[in-house]
Length: 294
Image (cartoon, rainbow, N blue to C red; front, side, top):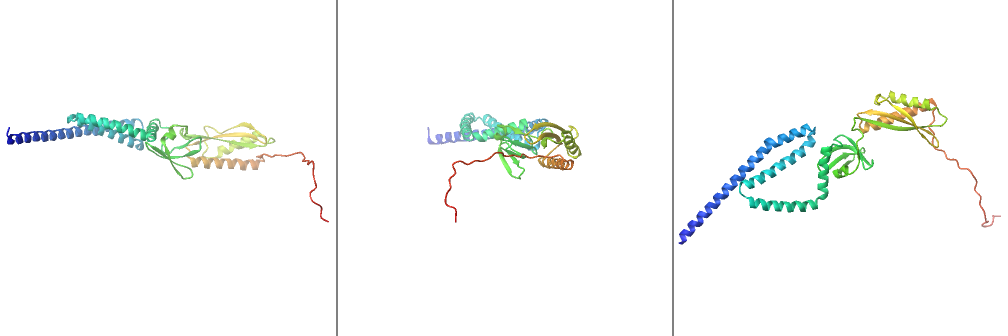
């Protein structure tokens, strides 16, 4: 075979390879575009409608829609590789991705744990943005300002912003005092053993009924719950509708102040503990140290 024939054959092979590569690239682009458009025009609206039916607010929808779009993009790339005839490359890419995912998973266990916990928070809805929550046995409390897939941001009542990992909120007990739309408050008023229990009870009930932010239904109630060393404990139970933390603290303070003033007017004593020590002190074996001055 002459040199010219070899060059012609090489040129033919090169041209065929280039043509095949161009065709494969076009098939890749077409397949990617078709799958991507179907996902954006069909899957995303369906997902958005499903989130709407579950009652998710806009803040909860955004990260979930982002995950949906990411999944569509991944499927579009995989389908495009397959349609373009790059199966071997796709298999290699899948192996590399699996190894990379394993390494990243081991290195980011805490991040993944918080991410999964964030999904549970979105699904279970133990609290929402604007709710007042307490956790870690009441050591921490505040108003939820933001919920993401990794952390939850809570504004404390001292105006401090806490960035809390989601796993800390799903791994323990979280108290949501206002989830039911109303809050019951309890407070024990101590009166003296010589005071009239019924009179004190009437005062406590009347002051609760006078306060405009204390509910009439359920009605305020008082129960004798304690017989202490120096006082008789009367537990008052009142309800506040749609309370925030500020409303709760203010209402409770105003109510207790009003009851204390009425107790003073009615001559009802609020005793405090008194300890009386009786007996004598005797010293034995005393010795005189030094000589008295002359």
